[in-house]
Image (cartoon, rainbow, N blue to C red; front, side):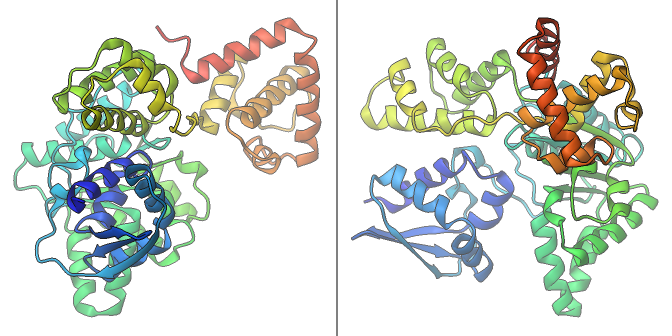
Length: 442
């Protein structure tokens, strides 16, 4: 068995679910040492990589090995330091290397497919490049998993680096920020290096800031870093899987910093954008794929762009191995193993859309008013937060102004009963749902 080739295929499979930050941080420099007799041994370049793979990603890794090799196996990990980790060993999405600033050079504005769902976010990101530190500072970008926020962060960094070659650009996930902060606590030399790196940045890009939850020391350090950079006129960009006000267990003063500039989200891609993305990704791989095949994938996978790309990669890998052209039948077979797409719907989007459709303000919606003009929109908002966002009764109560969960439950029961009897209300709710999902965009 060609272990190097097999490991590439395994990492390609993992790209369906894991972010670039995770792949680039914890899988760089790893190797598949052996795969036989029901056991897979993985070499890791250091203790940090080994512990994270063993404790956090062993399940996904075993699943990927099973999908690629067709056999179940137990995992073992061993440290084998490498002098120069070869980033080329990552899957096809991450073929470009990661320089010292943490940026992936292939993640640029040119390789980012733009549509209605990400147009505003892209425009803001490009404006940041034009005037770093002066316009949209800080810039906070949020979206569901796999919709392109990490790509945009790298695109900002790469564009700034190209436009201003002497600029000090630093990209790091919140997890990497925390890891380096902990190392800094352990020695003065490491602390000096840590602060020199992050507080010396001209452009600081921090990804997945929701992972700072409950990490008080890291939050304190990021707060101080933010203040120093902001006062010096440096550009700061954050990304998260939720709106700043939805991030739990993070200091309110830090949340206020997140929300103090431009806050923009990326919505799920519509069918046209999903098709554009698949065409572009196939082109990058130098593969010609019939439109019917791309449409088959795009129609079923409505959520994560990463999942779209991963499914296309899997299809092309299987087609190459079987020496056949990608076909709709083969695509459907691959799609059977794909996890069901889960739409990302943020609570602020639901509340904002409900308020717009009923012509009331958020303050009115979340007030103590019991007038019908306010109660009905509040019940509809609770219903959509429950059905589309999967929020709990307590979460809905908090979002709608601190209402008791029994009040929310009563409202849900009332609106569900009315929906079964009132065609006007049913059409109204479906119209709001379509607005939230972007289905009515042309």
